[in-house]
Image (cartoon, rainbow, N blue to C red; front, side):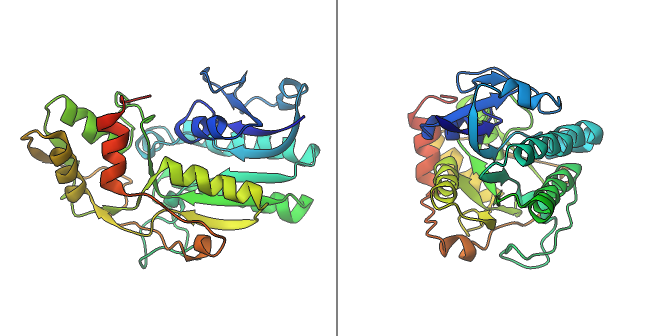
Length: 294
């Protein structure tokens, strides 16, 4: 039976895709209940470890995803995000894979020159992470031009889900805020809190990937809600949901952070993407009703 290979299956996006795609197999360098094959994509023996599978399509989620970590250790970021992608593309080329879906990032845009950000916005990343994701995109497009590889590039904005790890210093701001709120600790905002993000639920990201798979859609697409949320407003929302009288503290801005960002999703809407993210309701459901981390 032909399968869909999901890389990064121990991670946030990959785990949900494996869970929601009946013919998916998961590959990751970290073992988990969503991972069938434990393998580091920086290793070139990919054909050998996949020899028992008839891989029809690939969803490439595996990546070093922290902006901060990329600033601290750019070579590590590049090894994972560029070389891992290149090795996977070589496998896809040799095996004549039907569709290669690359999960990129809104970080490829850098500081917006205009808002909302559409897919044609200039790409000027301000962190090694954003740069490595952009180079990955360029390799995907190059493999299409040189070898005819059919591809889809998806640029999610700020994904949130219960599987973001609260004890990881590189987790998303929602998870960090919720975890501190549950412990009765003040919420720390880096900067003045006026910075904006487009928070999109994991459910919308999964539905968009499934849409691209089912319709065999090619091209480059933003995946977000098209709505900006201020970090200060997010903090107040989480304090309200916690039911506690918590303080907000401010710290210096972090290097490599973008100030304002939200998506133009008109292109995605034209292929029947319908975002259903409702930030307050999703945060209540994900973190305050269900157990964190499940």
